[in-house]
Length: 332
Image (cartoon, rainbow, N blue to C red; front, side, top):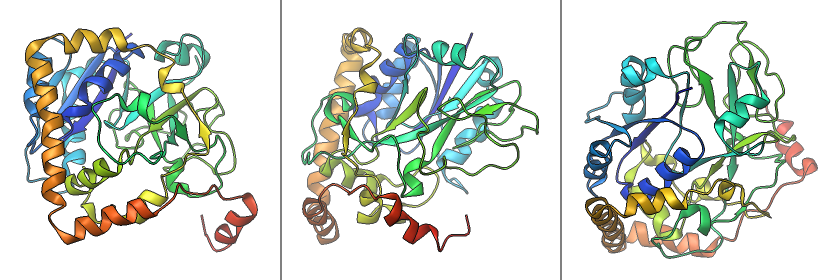
């Protein structure tokens, strides 16, 4: 069985080895990675990894009419790796799949849902934990506190990605595949059947959507790193949404969650770091992040945002009663 991960990156070389090692250990067999406008050497790292046989790298230079991510997925749709895959998922560099059944691999997840054609991978938001400075340490070992299994608000914290059969869904999408038809069997991350038709892009609030699988989302990271995320911008739209509002809606640290550590990727990471060329590129990418943060802090708007991050505590989890004050005005 071939399971494909589709990734789009820009200036994220410092995280690439950990992400690749984790998802290889989780059972992904193929990686189709698109890069655009990299300044930190991410593209050079991808070229080296491609030469080593770990992934396929496709440069994706702009301009992009609808964003780099949309353009990459259009190219992925026609790529031989996508056509050869049995299953596929578009997963970002700050997202790590966590399977709760069997040996915690994709294969175990599919064994638990043998009747399915698609599985919604609901985000589990991991908070900042008060960590200010960037460190060259694994993200999954640094951030260990997250949102609770049940959230009543905000809906953006319950968005999902999708693992799907490529034979039945011919077009990958950012959150859900496109081009399918009614009758395909789709389940949520707790194994419940999802309704047919044009479903929403987020899992229902007020229930546990991650009984079998979740997608751990380290959306904000360190405070210094968050400024670089704002500077980079989103792959599918401009960076206007990156502010303290984005931070507050994702900075949950209510419960401990070590699910990303259920698969042991240390041996794979060590193998990748043992390559001298790749290791040097990784270190250079981290140094680039440190230098870029220092450059950004010379400008008042970035200093102001950094100050706000220092001021803001972890986000409080709303009760159902509090969330109802918002729901009552919603048409959704």
